[in-house]
Length: 137
Figure 1 (tube, rainbow, N blue to C red):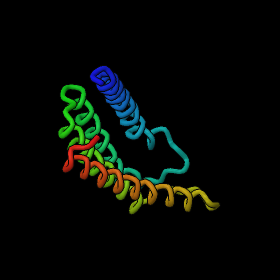
Figure 2: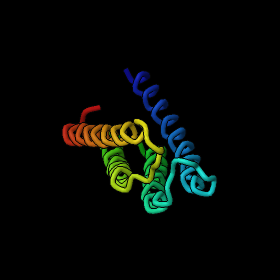
Figure 3: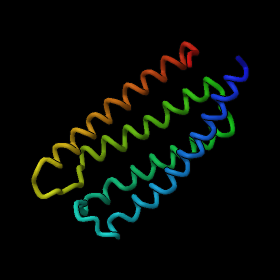
Figure 4: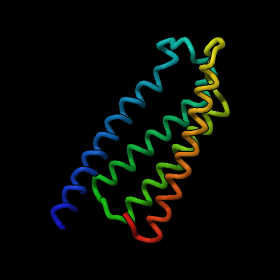
């Protein structure tokens, strides 16, 4: 049983490392999208860029801390904290909605995707809360 737990622990560590790598790349992309002239982004993207960046930095810090210490209680607490930052960034993106697809179904689809993302983040946070409270994995 201990070997199985060690394998899971190792896989989580690899996941944390990949999350950090993704966050660094995505942080660079997010902060350069307007410079690159992405056609469906409006200038109001500048109003949400900071909160997306903050969420990505919080995720990087959370995953770095989890690389250092991966205790059960701490893992659930860190994931809840990262989820809160993700929720705020996604909600801000939904409210500002800095996209202009020039008609068609894309605006509705992206809006729906953001709403479903908010629901998923909320459910995930509730699950992590119960895992934290009841000590489950």
